[in-house]
Image (cartoon, rainbow, N blue to C red; front, top):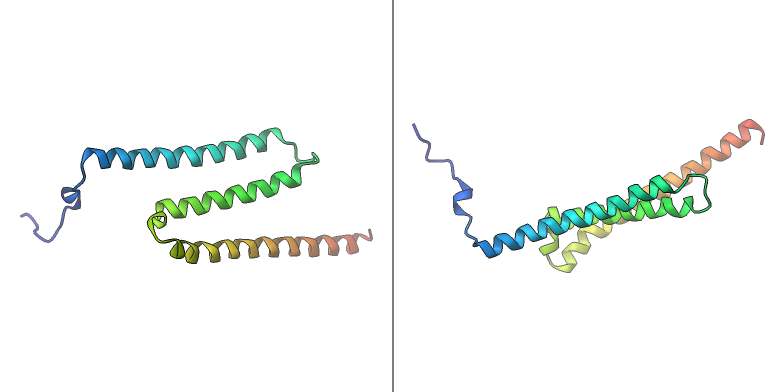
Length: 123
């Protein structure tokens, strides 16, 4: 018995080959951008030693690149990139503010723990 209440949406995909090429090009571009950023992070993590003088800068670069990748993923995969600029900002700005708040809390708590450990150890 065949059900008549199930709709097969793939049969209603009305786009031609030109639109298909455009969609595939966009997918490859997104993949290339995310892969390039990840490769930069990995290569930097491999070659820069943690005790070097620029390690603090590298850590901040990792945070910034990760935030960029997260925002880009939201724009592309949640189809937010096709929306108006005001809607993009309304969704992304609170997200970035929350991330910055979490980083602030992380730094403040780390400094407090460091101070308490120094007091406890008598340094």
